Length: 389
View 1 (cartoon, rainbow, N blue to C red):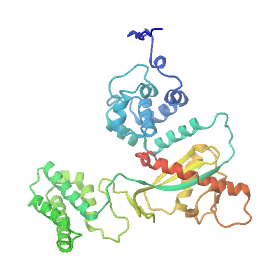
View 2: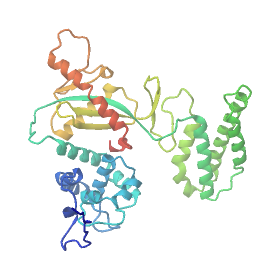
View 3: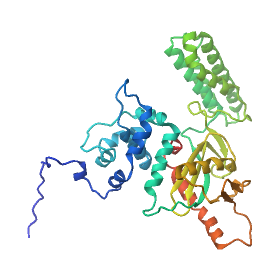
View 4: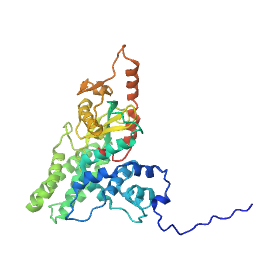
């Protein structure tokens, strides 16, 4: 029996749309119909004006792009490029016909996140909880939850004082060039020569010269900052004043100081000592994750920019859980890092400890608390997870 080549027709139906061309069992196709998009339309329309300004992108489009960004672990740039190629992305965003161009420029996603703020991201999390709730689960009774924290690392290089000083010098060069300021000396050749001397800091004969070079670079950075502060016009000084204050703070901080600056573009980054052999320090922010023990759904996520003890983060995590679900957790199971709290409102907090009279139910729930660890490990690998929270 001979096989014949399949014939392809280039003509589509007159009224054919994306919904007729896609697999209706695809996860994104199903998710597009589960989400209540009107919730976001009603909540976010207050951030837009109806009388003036440039026409904004549809709210559903921007919210869907945020969801896709974290579901598929994409950067803003890759997301808008793939959206123009992926029909399922476009249908999820509310399009009925193929759009060959990108939906927006990547910076519009940044502006949208800033516009809706923390409350808007929390609303997206609330809708995620509703969508992922098992069918038929209308139980309003208080539940048992697991809570733990992690350090969400920022995308910065390992911080050293020398790196910060050199970045300050380069930033001063840019400001001087932009504002047409003639500095007394740019030190470009001097900095290049000093950087070469720093390369030999681990050698026997070069350690002394490397230490002198580091001090010299710090001195040069301080000179440029002070010179810019003197020569900038008063009308422009206010624009650069926050940056100059940040540079001065970096130059004045000591090794043993608290609240040090580890990154110029992320000044809120904190240092956390984890005590792990392979990674003793992590630089980022603390994130609290709350998971329902019955369903395994993430019911809360909070970002803290301060170095708080785990027990100090628990009240805010439970308050967020109450806002998102409308109920209080009956039992909260945590690890020994939360020592110090036993109750909060009507919630009982259980920290593992030696107990010969422990029941099988309590032992099982303590064991189930460990299931939050792989969830945290997965979330930690998602780029920009701290932005969600």
